[in-house]
Image (cartoon, rainbow, N blue to C red; front, side, top):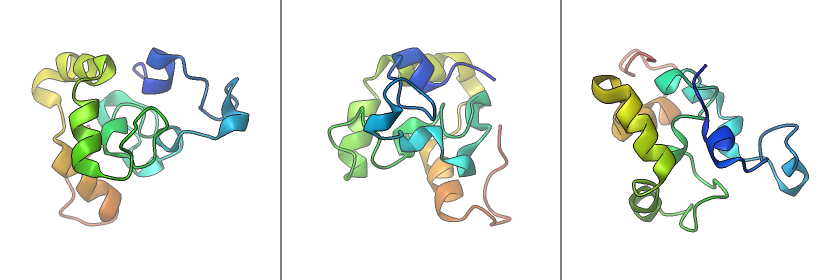
Length: 107
């Protein structure tokens, strides 16, 4: 697996992390995006997961995405994945319709 957001940010909000008693980050347990960009759960697609603690705008996707697109981790994933970067629309489709045959395949 490649580096996940909670490792990059060293937030400790993953299961068993040093700050997990303050709440588990939903990206660390969102298994519908497991494998996206080579990450564990949604660890490399956190910008589409609602209620992540690192975003002040976690309820409004447009504002959250705008904020996340300036994040160094998001930029790192975009750079590392280059042409294999999965568009947010596809990631959102996988969240909404995980068993749909029309959902794009996982990276």
